[in-house]
Length: 195
Image 1 (cartoon, rainbow, N blue to C red):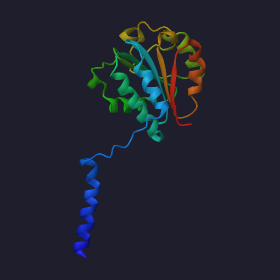
Image 2: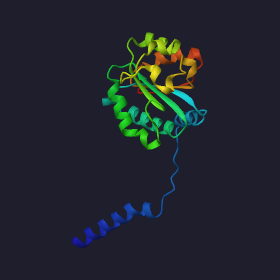
Image 3: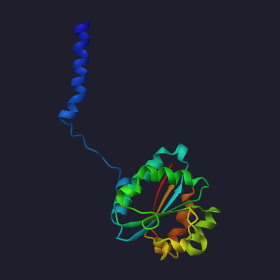
């Protein structure tokens, strides 16, 4: 019995380690939507400004929060500015988790120069319309209470046309608010949602 167990476990170990010694060469197929998402970010011109809407429930959206982290990693490898905002009132939790996972300082990114979080915007559709129409009048401070006029990367942002891309992460149909309004300004939009 002991000899049979030894042979069985030896065979199992051999089979488990075989792919490490000689990889199987299985193809890795990337979904066309994921490929387009990657290409959209990859093709952003230098000094682009990207608006990210963090409109998801972190506690039940592991998929979305992981995708948001991967996207922010990708953006931080490029020479772009990232403005983050949310239409849900507990967005600070999403932002803090995202920053903890991504670690912008490892990319040499500095808050206020390369990225900023504006916090929660009340009154969903109206907030989206107002931020697109008159950014500085709608958003006066970031989530830390710093005046927008004192944040270097926001000085030249006046309306939606100053953004090169809108990325929406939503766990419910909030993305309709963003796409409905921002498409009128010609801002390309990509979204990740659970529906």
